[in-house]
Length: 436
Image (tube, rainbow, N blue to C red):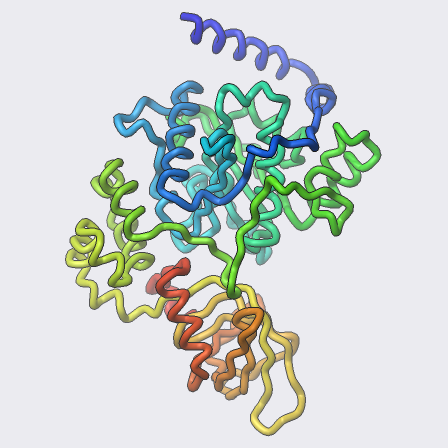
């Protein structure tokens, strides 16, 4: 009864707030901002890397969603979605004395699309060439919800830095309940993706949902315009941006360390896939044909097939040999230099994804389809791969597909390391031209 009374009171308060003009609501929300720059030493923000950290995040998410009416209680006492299994999803956590007290997941765009696309259209964002990610599964433990953003805002700062500087994201989208959308618009400066209101959003137990978008490339300028003249406790610009832009850094935020040019931080091992997603949940029992195919394209490596019997069953169902006609591709961000044989002029290239047999690049100058180039690719801080590659296609966005003809051992080692430890991008049949 006490919980029901609190929920009714909260709904009444939100209802009254929404009766105010939008500018008044947003100014009122911003007036409550009280940022804390002195974080406790035992409060840490990091990528969820272990089975225990992931399970802690999913349990917190379950309890929060049940309490908010966004899902029915599950026997596993966890809220886990298919997208949490994919290597293009990164789950961030806030840990207080080792316990998960906050979490949010970032789902990078992929050939299977994003969860909110069941009801909202993000094609206009993609058509601009933007790399999009969906922010999902946000939860803060109850005893930290009233701490005036002690946990929430450092988590959002971590989210912003990770998306922009580690995940190579241009724009983030989210589906949220209309009553909560003002918080993200007023403070974080999200804008409506569209005017559409979904009355029965399946991803949240039939609750209402609206979609929001934030262009991370423009966010610092917008934060500066809104907050730069505010005192520190209300200066979200200073709090959010990096020190190079006049912001602050927090030792509590543990950014990932990478040894090569990958942009994913895949933490799903065969053991985690088997223990957390197979044994402790029913996800594998309810996979669609497309989801099975997608899982196999990500986790078709023998180390996964041999360790997870359920994955082997899927491989046998699809005939694993069939999937081997597709070379796995990996999202990276690295630079390269291209020369025509025996020519002095060099072109600078940005490499966006790779496979053992090809690269997807953009070039500082025009490449000629069918021509062969000599490439030097910076695959890590201390390693440069040389190769001979042929341009096999070009698209309207100015991207080129290159086929590797010959490559140095550094390239083979790089791809092999990605194949075992990295995040794989599935190449569906209609995208075969992307891989050589």
